[in-house]
Amino acid sequence: MTSTYELQRTLYSTLSNVLSIPVYDEVPEGVAMPYVVIGDLYETGDPSHDVDGRQVLVTIHVWSNYAGAREAREISGQIIGALQFQELAVSGFRPVPFALDFFDVLRDPSGTYRHGVVRFRAWLRSMP
Image (cartoon, rainbow, N blue to C red; front, side):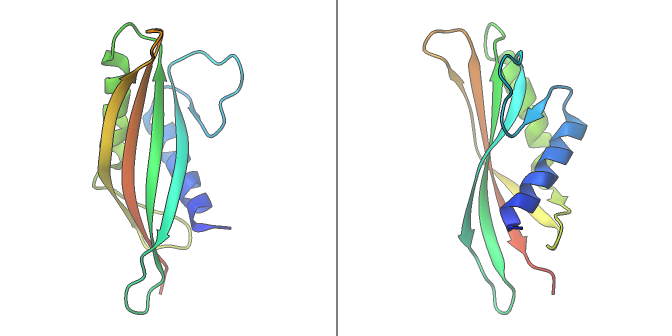
């Protein structure tokens, strides 16, 4: 297993327990909005002294067809509240701290939906 796989499992579990809407890795066809998608996890090496470490950029997407940005912003706020400054338990690693890197709500050019983008930095350090 890769470190990002274990991190994604933890994210899915955490967000599924906090949010009242579905959380997906791959969205099934025909699913109604709103929902959240765990997007890309971009991993780079970040070792320190004798500890294997990685820094991971985690992108989470919020999809809403609510008229306006309110719903997407509220859901994004719940995600930020669940992850910002938290240290999540990820199998095989020390508690993983999260810090908000970026957040925005984008308007679909057709005006039919809103796309929230929430990005975090997470630091994985292997167990001693």
